[in-house]
Amino acid sequence: MTNTRTSPAAAIALAIGAAGAAALAWGTLVERTRWTLRQVEVPVLPPGATPVRVLHLSDLHMAPWQHDKQQWVRRLAELEPDLIVDTGDNLGHERGIDGVRRAFDPFRGIPGVFVNGSNDYFGPVLKNPFNYFTGPSRLGRRAKRLDIDELHSYFDELGWHDLDNTAAALDLRGTHFEFFGVDDPHNGYDRLDLITAAIDELRAEDPLGDESWPDEASVGARRPTVTVGVTHAPYQRVLNSFVNHGAQLVLAGHTHGGQVCVPGLGALVTNCDIPRAQVKGLSVWRHGLRSAFLNVSAGLGTSIYAPVRFACPPEATLLTLVPTE
Image (cartoon, rainbow, N blue to C red; front, side, top):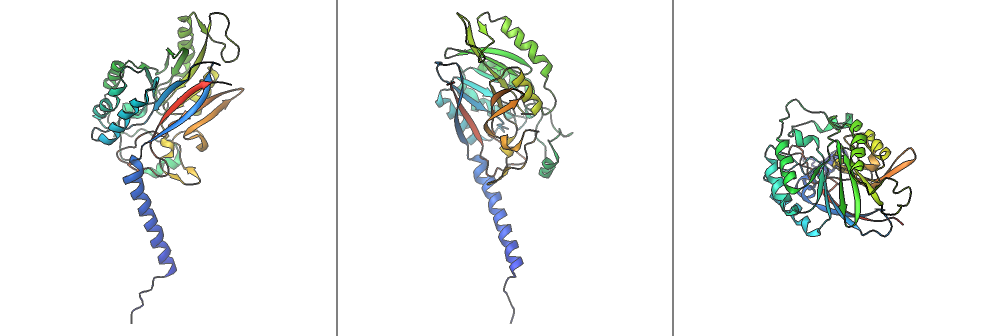
């Protein structure tokens, strides 16, 4: 008579295999498209100011056939944000711009600012995912160059400001905002040395600007200014520089929130040098005696060669900027 009983070790192995298969199925078939809107309040406005709603979008990694994602992003226009901030990696295919257009067209007429991510320059390539445990990813030799000029031309049609290694100013609901940003730090395109001159030039053109906020109260007709730094990848050198330049709020993406996380433990990798505890969500970044609120978006997409998320759903963020106490 044949003994068909399974040994304890084999039973454990089968259970682990089944759990792994279930997790993979969940991550690829369900969670990867479980787009989520995260909403937070950030107290950075001057006392008495009207709240400002900022829609933070990042890491769409758009392919033209991803119609469900395009439709979900389109519906975000119904939130009626006062500002769009796009922190890069919009493209995920050589014709990803077609999907970006379908997703972003409802945002026409809404002010916006943007910076580049590495995947706005180069298309995705197949990589060994375990290499991320050895450090930030590197640009593959087989990566195809994408048409970033077409992307920029479309953003210009929308009226959005390019913040790559430069600065811009906007008035939103009665509050004056300064924005400065850098080109993709992941590929070393950031020029932090240009930020000081860009801010000085911006302020020279604004005779009513008050550079003292929030350290001192505004005087007479001078208006307080809220300063926002924008980057794709939240490398520490960039965050420290932004805080030194007076940023009160910094917006970033790139990390995908770890993309594959362990419940109770969180992200295993960040794909940059930011601490794992700050790989996504709202936190405070401190450097020296200064600090700024930092919002890192987990992003809305994945590479077409790694279409999986686990314990880290794709997201957009609606930040409501409110007055400080």
